[in-house]
Image 1 (cartoon, rainbow, N blue to C red):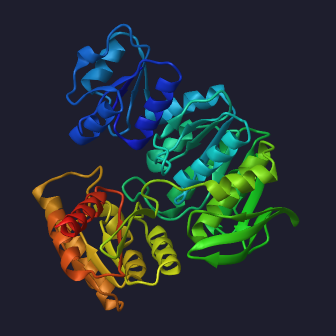
Image 2: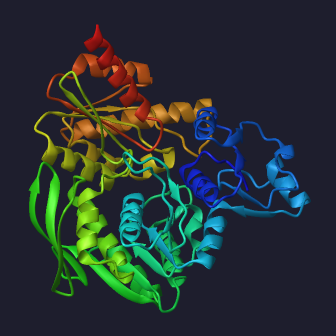
Image 3: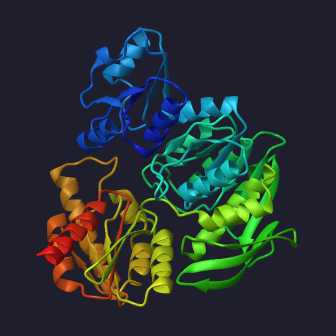
Length: 458
């Protein structure tokens, strides 16, 4: 198998599970640091486009949606008559062979998918798993098994329409991906098409208190519907019993019949929603309540999902993937519940189009931190030119200004080394420092840890 653009989280997950299945997996990745990471994991990966990498012994070529269809390795595959798919099409092929669980929605896809996978594995179902983030302490993105397949279903460019699952989870729908959806109705139409593709006789697990999700399933679902909600009537409901240091204890009921009492190891009220959706899926496979309870109580979360990185020099360092206003607000609220210190946030906006479209909502979320440093906008899938470079900085300044107008305390800082110096000078013992964003902002967190540890050693 040959994977083009192998360094993305989904493609890497696919590579890992194919290797576990016994395949010889090669690939290419233009990003040098990602390619190096793949090589350290034992994959043969090139950084340049080279048609000769695709030989007659290759049986399947998969390209990332970020890779052009005219890439030399794609052209070579067509010349040799080798099966060639995009990543979403490849996942769709896997779903044709197995009972499939696809987790879709604006928020919580990775964590909910990982929770479902953990529950099915503990329940003896031996799932195949494709998740876009590694489990803390376990490593790896993909898992090969003989049972059902569990995967994230991403709405970007309508990728999830290649997947036709037996069970679909719909966590939420909010405005996002402004580079490929005209408006909210366009986005909902895409989700409706995804829901319509669920097998007849299958199940759609949908959040009861998300109005957009409810509109979509009423319009398009032909499968059986199971709803879930925290503190509201639903097929699967969770009643909050308590919270300690940001970690929630709650009671799960199925149609008002007690199912299990659960205490999560991962912090945040939003994790109760994720867990409730995962419980609903596990029940479809007959996973016992006692297994659900013990598995979720041990679930340690995913990397870059409010991940505790270090305690150094009296500061708590946390790294988070949040780049949408709802996720940012949930992350900051969780840190407030879990810590008493000042919350200092380094935020890297993700994409010019998303930052413009959600500017006011981003400001409303970020004002909840005690101090915010905003970096240049990360231009994922957008042109890297002098013009967009200036736009990226102007938007960051505008966002900081909006935060300050709302009563927050925001500033801008450009280079990662500059931000590390600012953090060293302007944070103190007792502070919580969180880096947020879907780009390369973790470099700031790692750099600050190194800086603090170097000072301690000195």
